[in-house]
Image 1 (tube, rainbow, N blue to C red):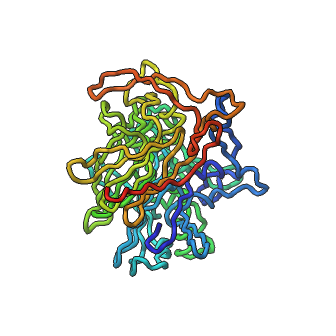
Image 2: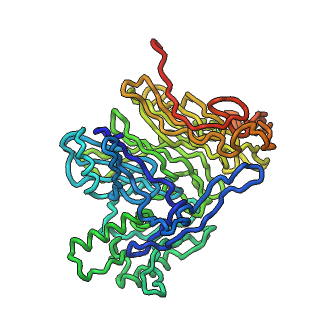
Image 3: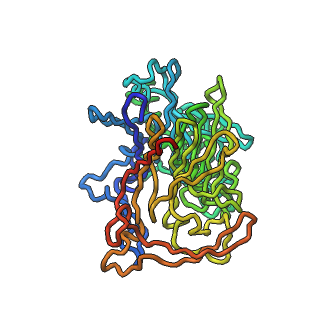
Length: 512
């Protein structure tokens, strides 16, 4: 919600429905995408995911039209895509709106190896509740975070004049980065484009070496790498354009392909930044990094910043980081790990995969977890050669849940479990009424793996017994027997009745 009564929403997983990649001129790299059924399993009632619906249209969907933050005015019904906030897998926007200062907007790119972003408006806010403030999101500069191992960092402008930085894929847990491909020119004369893998020598996913990528860019641009900027990687013809219009079109391409250009500028690949929220009292940023997995073809976190993101022993459980911007210098910040996920015996705080965040009026942090049903929340016991903290330590954390974490006082950083979701669901959208007396949250896709629990004719049992090996606080392993539901009947609780999504309101009991 905005301070002037409208809404912002993120177009997140658009890559499942329309092509994501563009060429060096910002044109679609591929007009269609394949239709795919994901997660086919004879024990499940339907595929887990279906990709490529856009390919069925007579005119395929133009992927450039998706992946933006959308502003919605509930009174007029007007929908506006805010392209200055970049094209990526947006799941949130956090606004900093202060009279007499530029408008700030923070967002994360929800992918392995995605980045943390900050938009700064070109003009100052005059009145916080003025509906015309949305116009400030149309003019300004998008910045991307570069985290340094010493706990400092800076915001790098995604601009044509920003220098290229020699890539360091060896710092990432998986050993590779996706960068703009400027190594080829197509047979039809169109310029090269899309992304290309640049990898360290020992990476599992091999691509160009760092030297080879730098040399390909030098050949394409005709100048030494040390002299090149992001704008040099864009191929917008100058003929018929004045300098201002040419610069605008170059900037548009940077925003279209923000992920690859961020890597080219030396931004830090992160551990799936899903949500960012501003603390209501001190204005610091809290970021939920939900997944430290490194063995992914998409990308992986910088292991110098996300210490548990190293190769085969990467922890999937994520963490919550805190960012404090330096007073008087909006380009710099300090960062720290506020709360690490995972088991207590493994140095974690007892929960997994933090996702949506929210603050109550007292400044307490509320965290919803999104534990993957096909991964950590699977109803399978881990095999005997795995251990706490490793990727295959499945089934330990149970259903997604809601946690309260104080941000100050003697219990700061210590999670308290407040609510547990139905089987095979994701909890999302936690927020408070202005008086702090009512908490709202959404229950999304309960029973996403096995569908209706006890569905007639399914042939599935209603539950299964699983033996899960867990670790005590001292690291001692023990076995726990669980009766795990297959599917869900929430909220009815009646076998055979289909589960439904819903919004839940939890009210404080008077006098408590």
